[in-house]
Image 1 (tube, rainbow, N blue to C red):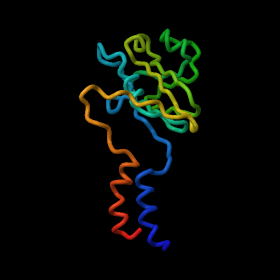
Image 2 (image 1 turned 30 degrees about the horizontal axis):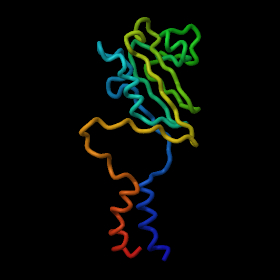
Image 3 (image 1 turned 30 degrees about the vertical axis):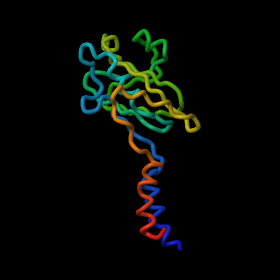
Image 4 (image 1 turned 90 degrees about the horizontal axis):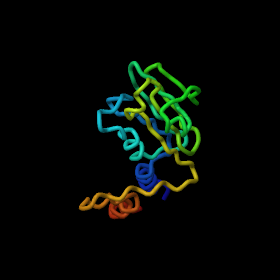
Length: 162
């Protein structure tokens, strides 16, 4: 009996995965750079499409620049004389160690005003995830999800005699 449950346990582990911290690359391949003209919301658009949990990290790669974690007020005015965190080493990882917003700006004069800033909203362990954005009109329906995947795999489990 125990051996017959092994495929089910392995399958469920694959479907639901183990809970681990994620490392997010800010800006993807381009890294932490001044956004193109007219794209000043690029980093916040990117951040809003990701789900950040306590324990995750954001990784900033840049050249001749810097990254600062600041307060909301400093974020809004694009400047700080005493940031919460500052780095200019070109390869900065920030550990998201608490729920709530993290505010990041470039420390180079004029970069923040041109859109090199981002708010990361971190979800705590017991917080419900934010509602997903509404799909654009005419969009295809979302994927079948975990429950649908289990239902789709049910015939295979029956064949295995589980």
